Image (cartoon, rainbow, N blue to C red):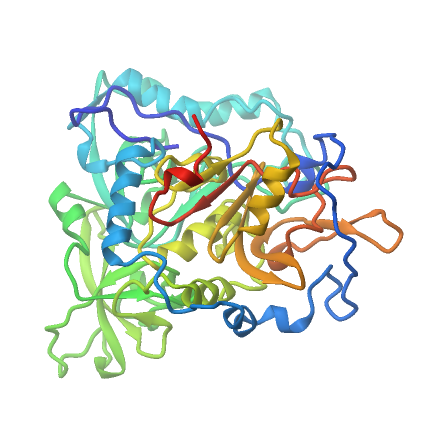
Length: 491
C-alpha cells in the first residue's frame, strides 16, 4: 500500500503494503469465537425479500431520505471538504503525495516496496483448474519481478491511467483462489485505477508488459498498455483546472467511436472527474460526430511509443454527471449509495464493480472526499472523526454508539465497512457491499445470507458467526465531519 513521504518533502522509504481488502465475512469472522455480548434483537425475515428486517420500501432512497430531519443540510461545505482532504493528505500514512517523490529512488527502497506486495504467498492457493500453486509456479512469478534489473538509483517516471485497470499482486492476469470451490475472490487482485489517475512508475516486469506503480492510495502491478508516460507537469496539470464533469452515476460511458478506440465506450466510475473542453468549436466534429448532444471532455491515451497524449472524447449529456462534486448532504449521500444497489460484490474491484471499501470510498468520491482504499486503513485514519472500540469496552459503549449513528457514518468490523442510512422500526439500517452476511432464522440458528452485492440490512440483528454479532465486532466508527475531540476515544 502506498504511503506518504516523511517530513521535509523527502522519501526515506515508501510504506509497506497492507493486505486489508474487504475480506469475506464468513472467513474473517466465523473463525473468531466469542460469546455474543450485546443482545441481538429477534427480527423476522421478510417473506418478500428473504432478508431479515428489510421490506421493499426500505430498498428505495426515498424511504431513507424521508427519515431525515434536514436532508439538504450540508454535513461539510466545500471549504470543510477541502480542509478534510488536507488533513487526510497530511496525517494519514496510507495517502501518498506523488509530487513529493524524489527524482530517483534507491534500489533497496524499490525492492522493499515490491517485496512487501509480491511476497511468497503464506497460504495455499489454487488455480482455476484446482491445481495447487506450487513452489515452482511461485518461483516463476517471482522471477517476473526482475528485481535484479533495478539499478542502484531508479528514476521515477510519471503517467496517467487511460482506462479502468486492475492492480495486481504479481505481474500476471492469472487468477488464484483460497479453495477449489470458490472462484469469486482472486487472491492476486488488489484494486483498480481509473481514467485520469496519476501514477509514479517505479519498475517494469521482466517481460516488459507490466509496470509497478504507486498511485495516491495504492502500489501494485498494472498492465503497461493502460498507462501513458508523460512529464510530471503533463501528469499533474491534467484536470487541474475546470470546467469539469463529475460522474455521479454508478458508471457512465463515453460515446462509441471507431476513430479513436482508446476513448470509445470508455467506462468512467462514480466520482471520476474529467476536464471539459469548453472552448471547443461546436461546428467541429469530435471523432466524426457533432458534439452538441454531449460534453466534449479531455481524456488521456497511450500513443504507439507509450507516451501520454490528451485527446477529445464525447460524454453524453444523458449520462448521470454534474458540473462539480455534489454537495455533501444526507439526501445526496443516500441517493449516491443507492445507485449501486444490487451491484455484484467485486473483490478488489473485480468484475468492473467494487468491494465494501471501494463502495464506501466511491460514494464519498462523488463529493470530492478522499478516503484511504482499504477497510483497515479507513477504520483507523487519524484524519477522520473516529470513535474506537476495544474488546474490553463495556456493552453500554457499543449500544450507545449504535443508537447515535447517523446517515453517512461508516461502521467497521474486521474486514468490512458499512454506511449508515438511518433508523427505522427501532433498528439502525446500513447499506454495504458484502460477500456474505448472516442472521438468526425462525429456529434461532444462524442463516448464512449469500447477499454477494450492495445490500440494505439492519445492523443489530446481523450475525458475524454463530456466537458473535456485528455489533459485538465493531472496531471503529468513522465520520466525515468537522473533528470534535469529545467524540474520540481518549488516548
